[in-house]
Length: 101
Image 1 (cartoon, rainbow, N blue to C red):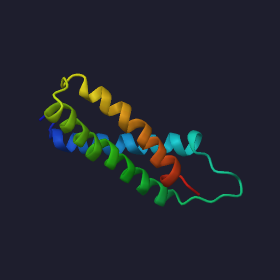
Image 2 (image 1 turned 45 degrees about the vertical axis):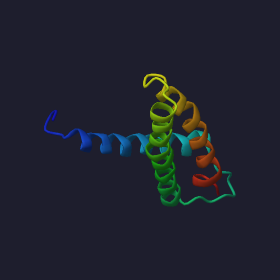
Image 3 (image 1 turned 45 degrees about the horizontal axis):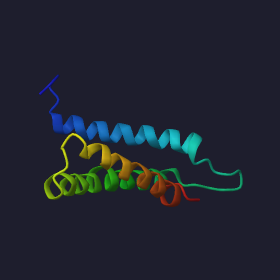
Image 4 (image 1 turned 60 degrees about the horizontal axis):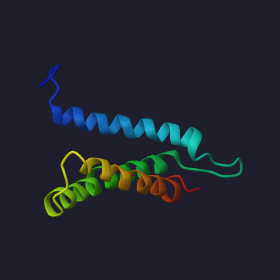
């Protein structure tokens, strides 16, 4: 424990804050809606959390398992390849699903 905060709780808090930060900037600058379009902020935020949970928590761990345990790739290189796969997928999920009007 550090500062009385268990590392699992810190990890969960970091996930919540980082996705909220990403949502804010994506909503403001990346996936802007047109003047005649409406978007439910709550629905988009929920979809953003689902998208990040799928790519960042589930899919990344599946890829790590495959790359390290099945294909015997270095545990130092595997996370890089996971990012190369999950970041574009997350962008597409956000563009076509979470921020769709």
